[in-house]
Length: 195
Image (tube, rainbow, N blue to C red; front, side):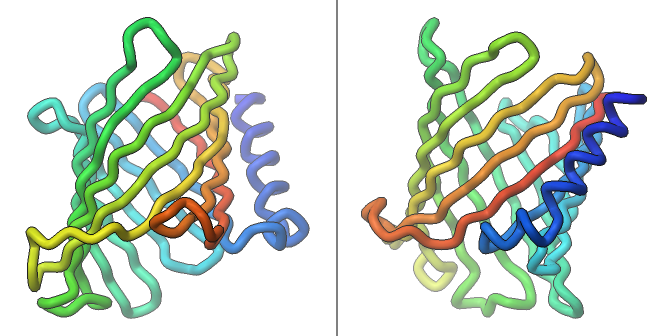
């Protein structure tokens, strides 16, 4: 319990205005995990609270998301699969996400395909990582016409406080389709509790 309180205090400190001003967006996320599914809530500075439920379907990590910003409701369904590369600390994966809702029309609902690569290595209870990802996007108007859309760089670390509780800190910087021009930078801290 003492470790959980310490983590909540750290999360609160990182979400203060002094830290938040260094980023375009900050978010706090709380996740409950069982052997079969997960439920999470994320509250970013932008105000679009995100609820998600996930589980494994046909060996894919599948998540359904609901983002609520005032009276605007948007939804996304995401399937993800990643794997380690031999005995190295490298991993690779890909995800597909379909987004729809109040902010989209029947012509602008989007499908994003995002391959990514990363490196992650456990050092005791701490596991730092770095990841690069890319996105191709199509709209429902022409669902098979994918265009290069964006890329991102993510760095962070997770820390296992116990067998049932861990926290994760990540910083994601959006980039353009050529990995050149930096976009928004988001910091997120999350607490995961296993049941």
